[in-house]
Length: 255
Ligand SMILES: Nc1ncnc2c1ncn2[C@@H]1O[C@H](COP(=O)(O)OP(=O)(O)OP(=O)(O)O)[C@@H](O)[C@H]1O
Ligand SMILES: [Mg+2]
Image (cartoon, rainbow, N blue to C red; front, side, top):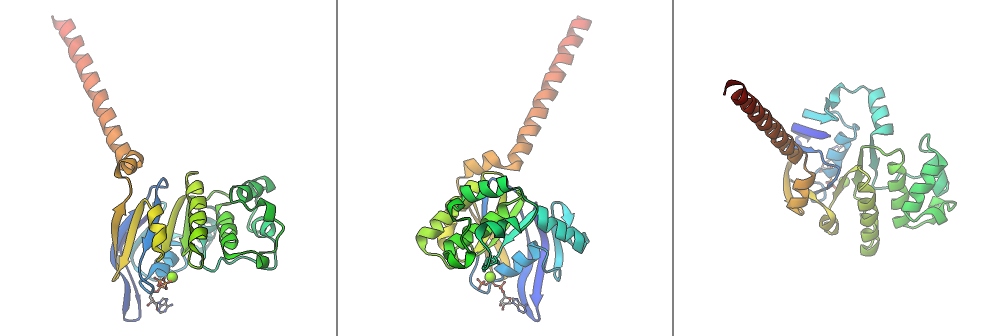
């Protein structure tokens, strides 16, 4: 879904991303990118979300070179297909939780309530955002991103200002929603998130290293490559079957 080829990003004489190539495809996995403060995590997220087009190399989103997307395409993508949960939430403090979700797009109450319920926020729906806790705000921000079931949700430091217990709760919500088929890509320097990750990318000195994959068997089971192998095997079986049938028929014909 997201593919980077030889991506380089500089600010003046500072190289933040140095010729990196990697791709993120499988929504069954929780993808987490980690790196020291100042390593370039938000810079990468801004490129992913189409807020920064000033880079060298290629970024393909949904199989299309993202530089070919016009502003109106990006608006559409950001409304329908790819959402971002910002570190500072970008919620309207003077509005209620429900209003924040309702005003974010053209959504039915039924969907809003179902998301609020799954995030344990339904009983708080009429609370003003200015009066709720950081963990609750984070859940509202995630809930708002989930509305409309986009294909990808990017999260910038979702647990940056939360304590350990709240972090665990937020991660449990994310895992629950991830199972609905949304691809989550999280950037963080919070190491406690890593234990929830299936794939971990490390950003260091401008390079990205894929460092760890949890439960390789499970990954293989869900991997599109395995699907390919299965297809090849199936095709091979069909070929062998057809060939043998023909051979048998030929034998019958000529013997
Ligand atoms: N608009 C900009 N102009 C110049 N330099 C910038 C700009 N934005 C970011 N930088 C620099 O790029 C580097 C990476 O910044 P970035 O915000 O991506 O880091 P980060 O990994 O998200 O850090 P943190 O964990 O603290 O949020 C930093 O050295 C930062 O100063
Ligand atoms: Mg950052």
